[in-house]
Image (cartoon, rainbow, N blue to C red):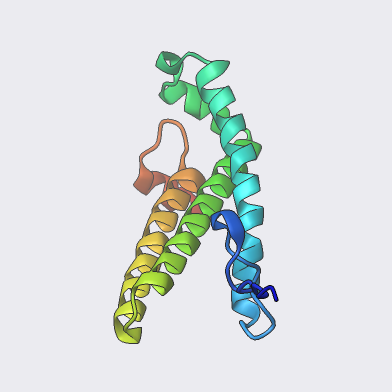
Length: 150
């Protein structure tokens, strides 16, 4: 009589993470979908960025004037902000999953994830401030004051 081999439904082949089950909660399901959607979006955004910045333009011609001319069109600011936001959130989500997998103590995991979250917020704010307030020929302080007066 042959023995029946059962597979563990929680383990997926080839190192893939299984879709969260019914008892895993809405956040984990959202995180699972976001990871895949943001990954595909990032691939497309990064390839377009590399083609524009490194293939169609010479890297040595990427100067202040080039960026100023590019940022005169609001589309490129939105594009760069989208790229920044998706990259940070995608990376933070991946690090959160790694913390969940390897840090067993709840308090330590919460502390590490809090530091990661605060670091991501800090870098997102710095990047966003740079993208939004960039105005050719003005300092950062003058750009911020100009935005506040409008």
